[in-house]
Length: 485
Image 1 (cartoon, rainbow, N blue to C red):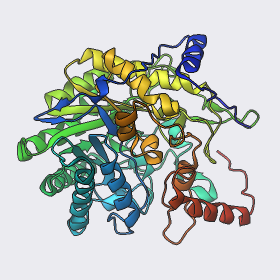
Image 2 (cartoon, rainbow, N blue to C red):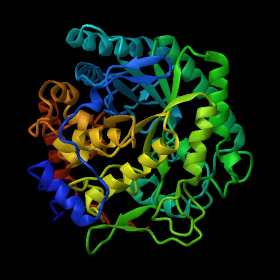
Image 3 (cartoon, rainbow, N blue to C red):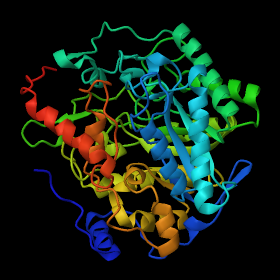
Image 4 (cartoon, rainbow, N blue to C red):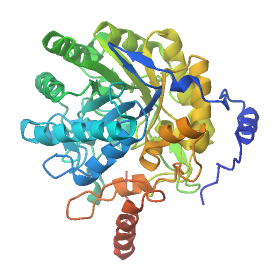
């Protein structure tokens, strides 16, 4: 059984545990700074609260928003956070992470336009105006995790061993598996530019060039062992994003703001220990030649030299806001989203979740302090439940972040900002419990659409019967054979 970590009844309880663990996490009981306006580029939003790009895996099979997509975005619009960072949207069909991910193409534009309009309309119904609301869209290529087949930019020994070409047969990426060519990457630049042009035409306030969670552009950042113009040196590994940003700026100018969610620390791949059930690093050698933001001599730790260089480069190429994340949801999920209970296909946390929260705050704080006039959006808050805004308030006051945002937390509690503004606190009965039911839904593929929609099972009754259906199907499945890696 997984250990129960969250046992706090008050802010003082969690402060005590933070002290026992020797961590640097502060909490403020009075929420003030987060309700002040924030200037982003040529716009000003009404508060310092946001919603991270959270996929619902609920689009249509041709990449349009589905009815659950519209419902989720309307709830975000009503929720009171003034930054809505729209979810991952593939720039080409082969880049889709699952069959129901959103896809930006000409045919789907009317439904994206409706999605944006309904989100803003929902906000106006509650708050009268949407002039201080910023809504963006994340543009992505899933790369190694494209569901039709992995599209990799270099061979990463540990990641290859847990990247499946055919999961049902336990077949992973071999050393002979093809790598995307420079010419193919050149053409993908065109796809990002076209998607940015379309998002701008629809009226999104900003676009995010996604460089996180070990998807394609994130993997390029760590491609030290790749040959050619997109690998090796830092200059080459950042060539793709630099050229995409330059082309967007040259064509669109100030018509749309540009942001980027990026991994400041990739970490190393983990797998489940067969005895303890805890996550354990897949054996590696040093100096570690893979990944981004890792200390090559001690890759379980971060080295922010290159991430700081990346942020400086992004600013020089017109990026007005960065969103700091880390890790991979596929092989070291405790880095990206500290959790209370493991997903069905995951492992028990190898560290207290507060350690993971502090890692987020420490790394984001270092970036914010290096660039004090840059809008930096922070991650890693959801596990803190009703105390997440108390930590966020402290981070804003300490100038460790500009905007506090939540992802899983907003799926469970989309109106968290509204409640906090009205009552001075979040309601414990509505918060995310970090028990991974949403992830279990996301990883469940055995239905006629090839992908179940994901949402908060404990807090949203819409997803309760869906989860029961998943459990019923799993109960009828034969025991899987052990996979050989």
